[in-house]
Length: 137
Length: 150
Image 1: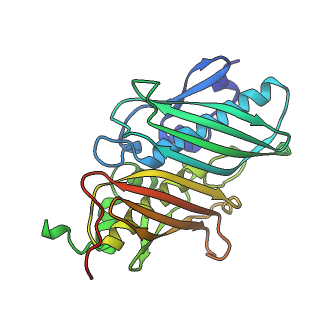
Image 2: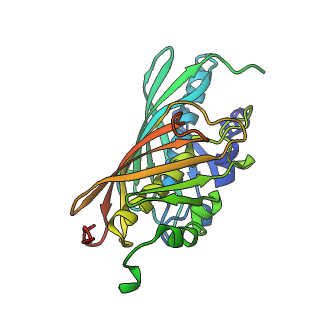
């Protein structure tokens, strides 16, 4: 089953236009197309929209990884630090997360967002995510 | 340009917030001082971050604080100058309450020739019980962020 079917993106992400683009090594790559909902100064991404993409890519990477090892948690944000490296231009943006540490109660991730050249990220983020008891269904 | 002098967030913010990402989020101006600005992110169902709780996602809270940061810098230097976010850190203390709007209050506590430093909080009604704390650093894009003599 694809992550899009198994882990629907939160309302905020879908509303902003964030989507699953593809999978690489079992980790989803998220994407967003340029449009009014993500625009800051004219023809450029708003830093908040870029952050939203990074954050969702981080959660997506963690959800898929946890599922792969049979763990179920309710994820909560602890913190995020976003580095804005270059201006996001009026074209699609992609993001993928990498887990740097998977503990019992918390995970540390780095996430990169890019446009044309993957070697020149538009922004990167470091995130700490709390992994609590599963939400009651 | 003389019309850009004496930046007044009470007048400029409603105009600046109606476009693009800020307009999509529905950010609203609330208040300001000499070096701070307060904005509101109204609760909206399509901005929730989880499927099972009616709580605003953390992403829009970053946008709220980023936008309040820019406005706080322009308010402090008293003019609009092109700036870029260098980095932004948000620490989440707790989720916002169900169906609660979130208020972001950011101050520019230091401004140099090339960088401006900001810090702020997000809360859902009680500033003494914040949802999140934020710290950030901004750079001037063209030219410098200058002090404007008072």
